[in-house]
Image (cartoon, rainbow, N blue to C red; front, side, top):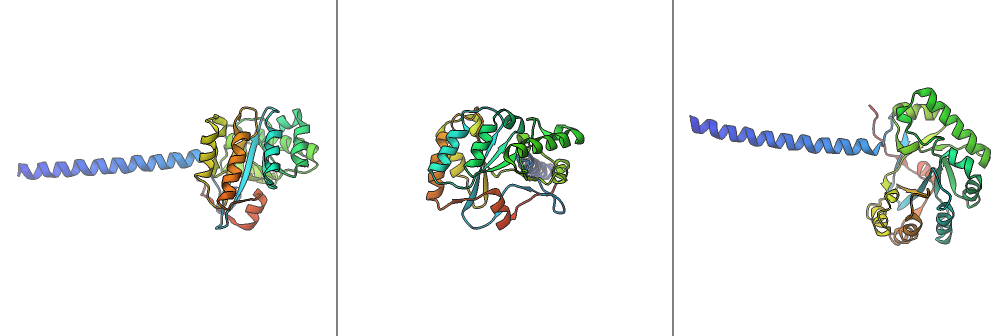
Length: 253
């Protein structure tokens, strides 16, 4: 009888280890998914982050919140590589300081979206403060470009169901990303290239930066473009991806 209970204890211990391991893995997946902040609602506003398509298309996007040294080199690369579609999400406070760079982006034929006014996470703010930032950024960008921005990438990429609903009230579509180049970490040109090229799939939205802190983006960008073209990829605007394919989404709790 004692032998029987020893065996049973071992089985219980093994089962406990298996359950704990499974719980730990599930927790990691949940945390990773939460960190991506890719949310939408099945009945309401959606945050677009990737198109479901079999066509080899991708969207290049660039966030800008400060500095004036990186915008022109990035535009020069895009034009020299004959990339006609890209989207720049610009902070409106930055746009006020550098209207000539906003005009440069527009004259080059690239799309301009809002990156908010203050570079602060909306999820930490009360509703009225978010509304004020949305209004102010829309007004500033409109005054410079003559066009009302319709795409919004919230500062830091942070948003939730509340932010989605507030953004919709200002006719914004919230745009996230599915490929993070991590160029803001300045990990080296090769690392930036691998982060994009090795993980690309049809319909992806690629996040890069045109702020001065991203010192290697303009060097990695031509390599990324050449290698993606070598894989058969074409570059599209966010609007084209949204029009031609259904966005993937997760439900917000």
